[in-house]
Image (cartoon, rainbow, N blue to C red; front, side, top):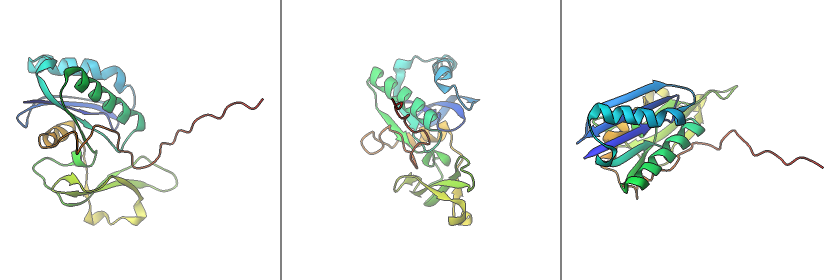
Length: 192
């Protein structure tokens, strides 16, 4: 089975196409924003390189966060739309679950430096059991963490795709996994 894996949770557009757990081809472009404009073209390049059509994809994996609020929403919406259009399952893999290779069945805390929140630096942390999250990711101040006891995540689309082999949409839905509320706040109506 072909698995398409999408990661736009951080400052990049990262896609991988796997077959029976092995990466056939991948695409990676670093970008702080603009993933929505690049995803379709990168997907087309990926399929051309693999010499398959989109209809041959049997499952979609998407990195659900934590990470960039907009990047997460772009990746999740794109993956869900493709899955709906193709009538195939889509599964969500957290940024921290996608942070280690599939063969690494890490159990314990896994962390990733969060975006800078002056004056304190924070980390996204998720406890994993055999490489899968036990609970949702959380954000912690750096001072509250024992970094020596934590594996540092390096999320990749290909690792999310490897994990997706064993996952079901029921237990791993493709929905955003935020570690905290967004920074953006709704505008107040003007005072008249």
